[in-house]
Length: 169
Image (cartoon, rainbow, N blue to C red):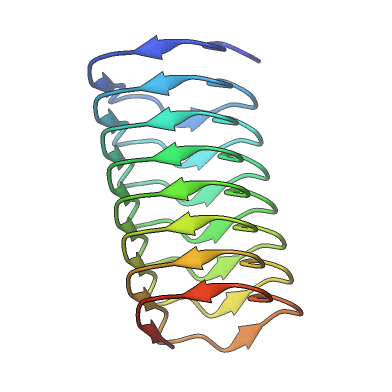
C-alpha cells in the first residue's frame, strides 16, 4: 500500500522477480527510463494512478490490469504487454498514449476502461473480442485502431470519440 508513492525513477526500473504490483504501489510516480518487469502477471487497482512513463512500459507476462490501475497516466514510450488478456474498469481513464499500445492477446476491455483517453500512436489489439460499456467514450485516436476479432461492443462505447487514423475492426 503506497510502497513507492510520489517516487521518481530517473533510470530504468528493472525488477525481474516481481510478480504482482499491489494496490496503489506507485501512486503519483514518475519513470523516465524503461519500466521492465518481465515476470509481473497482475497489476492491482490504482497501482499507477496519476503516473508518468517517458520510456517504454514492458511487462511481457502481464495478464491482468486491475480497476483504475493507470487512471490519469501518461505514456511517452510504447506500452507493450503481449500476454495481457483483461483490462479492468476505468483502468486507463483520462490517460495519454504517445507511443504504440501493443497488447496482441488482449480479449476483454472493461467498463469505462479508456474514457477520455488520447492515442497518438497505434492501438494494436487484434484478438480483442469484447469492449465494455463506455470503454472509449470521449477518446481521440490518431493512429491505427486494430481489433480484427471484435465481437461485442458495449453501450456508448465510442460515443463522442474522434478517429483521425484507420479504424480496423
